Length: 196
Ligand SMILES: [Cu+2]
Image (cartoon, rainbow, N blue to C red; front, side):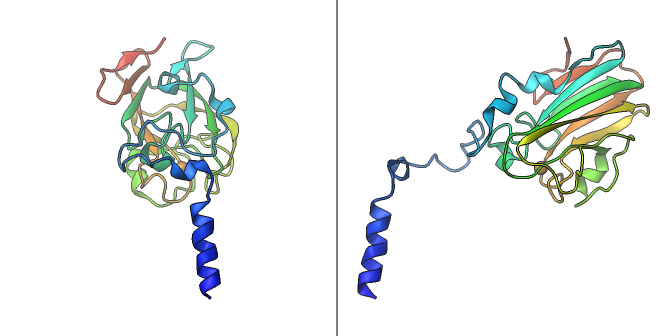
C-alpha cells in the first residue's frame, strides 16, 4: 500500500509542464478560450456577425456561435448570454441562421418566446422552421443552417434548445418590432447600431 501511495504521488509530481502553469483566478475567464474548440469552424466571426443584412431586401443573416469563448461556462452565442445581445428586426423579416458549435459539448439553436427561456425544455420553435436539427439533443463540432420568417411582433429569444441551457443563460434576445424600419444590433451596454 505504501508503495502504491508513493507511486501516485510520484505520478502527480511528474505531470507535463501544463500542470505547472498557474490557473487563472476564478471569475476572470470571460474572454478566455474553452478547451477543445475546433477554431477553424468560426475563424473571423465576431459578435457583429450576430446580425448582418441578408442577400435580399427584408432579410437578415444571423450567425450564432455556441461556446464562442468561456463566458457563462461556454453557454454563450458569440460571447453573449442571458439576452445581453439584442437583435431587433422589423416584422416580416426573413431570418437566415447559421448555427456553429465548435465544441465537443452539445448545443443547438431555436427561436422561442422570451418567457420560455425559463423552461427546461422547448419542443417546438415559435416560428416554423426556426430551429437547428434535433435541437433537444444538440450537435457537436459542426454547423447547420435554418431559416424562418419573423411575422409576428414580440420579444423572443434565440436560445440553445439543449435541455436546461436556456435557463442557464444560453440565449440572445430577438425583438421583432412593428416600429423598427431597419435591423439593429445591441451588444451589451453599447447603443443599438444599424447593421451593415
Ligand atoms: Cu447550449
